[in-house]
Image (cartoon, one colour):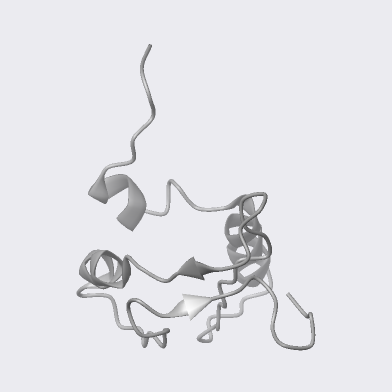
Length: 90
């Protein structure tokens, strides 16, 4: 049995992204739009029975993004979060 494990190069080239981002990029390119965009990543669900999670992995993400002209705003590493806010909105 083998597992697909993405390497750094595949991630940096966007080969492991969600299809949503590929389609969005395609639409923007077809329309000739080349402005900066904003992306937000959320956890719409957690494993069954889990009410919270701990945010981690930011250091690895920042390392992958090194050299790319972007701004990253994120929770502090180790922050407890829920998949919905206090009003129940994901």
